[in-house]
Image 1 (cartoon, rainbow, N blue to C red):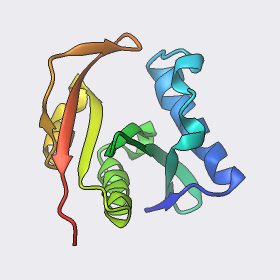
Image 2 (image 1 turned 180 degrees about the vertical axis):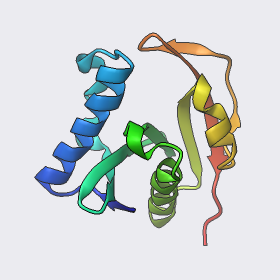
Image 3 (image 1 turned 90 degrees about the vertical axis):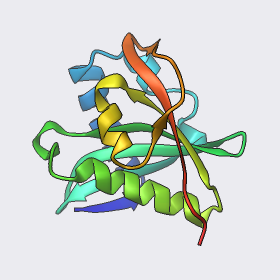
Image 4 (image 1 turned 135 degrees about the vertical axis):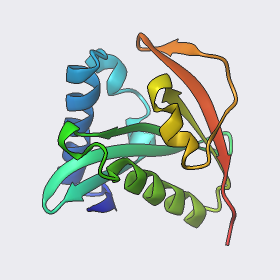
Length: 143
């Protein structure tokens, strides 16, 4: 498994296909909510297993905080460390940008996954695209 910053057109296409598969088809998020106005200002990440795209995520800067969004892994790679690899790559990228505070809105079922990576819940439950979420944060050390 390797995670890459999606810079080429084909990599960005891979990102969107994975997100559509997971969020639109599996979780019934409307396409117009999934692919949003923040795509062009975000840094996209894609996880490959060999040459096959299997996971994705995005990162953007919001008021000096790194916002991690759209973390997803195709069904056949779940439970194999793919999500952890995506998060590790995004956190490493944030360090290169001198960003130490990270924030994400986790689907409630995924909170234990993010807690295992050091994220802490800082909000009450709220709905986003019809799915319950909580906001989580983490401070990463700058080296």
